[in-house]
Image (spheres, rainbow, N blue to C red):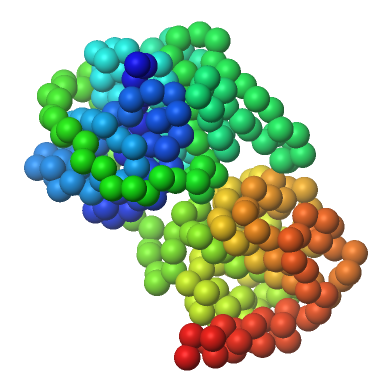
Length: 317
């Protein structure tokens, strides 16, 4: 049976659901080994949380270099493990860190890479959405190990409990990976809402908010959702750019996406159209986003959202 490596993804000190999604996709190809990269002494605690999904093995690699040398050290560790176990594929989360690690691993292993896949089948055929999400492409890596980054929330995860065999690998990070050193870092400020790219529900606001996101945020909070924004809203300075959803922002694939006051330019659709269900609230009945909506409300978001917020509150009472 072929082997597949995944890079375990974490939210704080626990494996994120993205790890289970990667494992689910990887298990279609072969036996799954999850790699946990950790600071010295932290590996066992992190590895203990990698217990959901079809994971057979967990390999812990501890090194202070991961903090001081970032993606270069992480990529070197993954490449070294790949050379030892010869997997047929390596799956990594398709976020900023994951894509940079994957690119470096591909160079180190002289392999091809596919980024931002929304699905992977048993033959290591990756599905991608290109040209602003208007075209579906099926791709395979033709050289070396198949290295694929998978978009969070795009694969329906198997969250069944697993008891993988856990081992520790001692590696010496290559000196070439240490040429750049991280001198300081500022972690993102976390609020009470879910992280945008991992949230099951996302409520986004656009030009129709006219800069007032209070109704959007209130509805998001009652739904336990993350808040997103269109490029028009972020460019206007109404909401931070870190919350932008779209081709030049973040890509999300939640179970439910609620677009409020967003017309639906193709750049925005590219970042959210793989959502499982889409609700559009817009007072313009000709808004393009209605074309891909599962449910639409033609109305003023400042009337619709407060009513919806109260309705959800009442249902929870």
